[in-house]
Image (tube, rainbow, N blue to C red; front, side):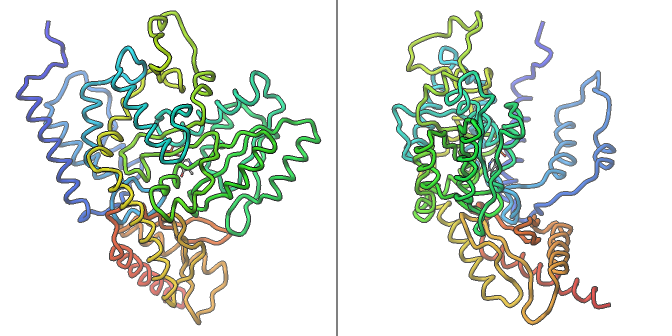
Length: 478
Ligand SMILES: *Cc1c(COP(=O)(O)O)cnc(C)c1O
């Protein structure tokens, strides 16, 4: 019997080529499209809700339906006017590399199954280790689905290595600007509320060091076991980098694990300016980087790097009987021993192929371009009589608000005005530009990590904002 999933060679070719053409056209025409999509659950149900069909439909018909209904109802995070959250600029080589990894369905768990996949994970994590001045021989890393899983993997490891079996007195410290995925990870790990200390940040959104030291000292006096500080290298809100050297000094003195969450910002190490800002990152015990953000990879690929790879194997290796035969030479790494997943997709391939194809220089250029573009945007805003900077250009993130010269608006009105500007831009679907809250002010935030974004895209969007702002102010007068 033929497998019920088999297609003829011709069918596969025409179907596959059609999809490649669609993707190529997307890459070429993306700029002309609108980055925002909005749809209600009801609208989506109307389009898609049905019982699983017993009988199939022609492949082309399904594909056409998807192209008409699914793709247009998904936001384009790689669009040059997608300014919000952390965009996903991606790149074509990695897109194709992902298709290869999926096409061959390569299992990336154990050495004996796919030695080349394991080797490429070693090679590419070594490239990253070197970039961050981590030891390449003793150090190690693992690819995860994203930054959230990398943070979780880090905190499991930190707790295992620092606390062993009994973590009833363990305390972990992070700032109020740390990413929510850290809190989620802490919850997954089953820590009680009193074991988690959220430390306020200073006026620049950095870890308040004095308050951190006070908390650690108090916890020691109370017989607790401080074991880990989570520093952020590039907060998602403002791009702020915590004082890494100072935190590393505290960790050394207090014998604490230093985890650095660089999911958004660590890639800035590729530029001169960024590497200055990130000084001290090399002192972390573990570091989260997220290649599907500023290393321009398609979803999903996150990465955890550690100073000593035995920390990972000591935390995660667990051998059921049916995995006995996978034990080999110690240098032949089984990545299922380094993290949570057993069956893993071949994430290293896209990073490997894109760095080999474009060269690291292309990545360096792109990251430097993004940082300069953010600074240019700051200049532009500072020269305008309508805008004020709330948090200056920091690792490709900038926060600002509409606050026109010689027009007197209360804080409440300013909040409402900026919220309204953002809502109208998003409603126009021309740009994805949403707000965040900094020191109780509603501000507009831009994250400019897409190398396709030009200063003209930004000017166009600011012009649109200006128009909407005037509209709103006129409406308020009536
Ligand atoms: C995006 C982000 C994360 C989470 O990463 P995902 O890839 O979305 O899981 C964690 N920390 C920071 C600082 C981030 O910006």
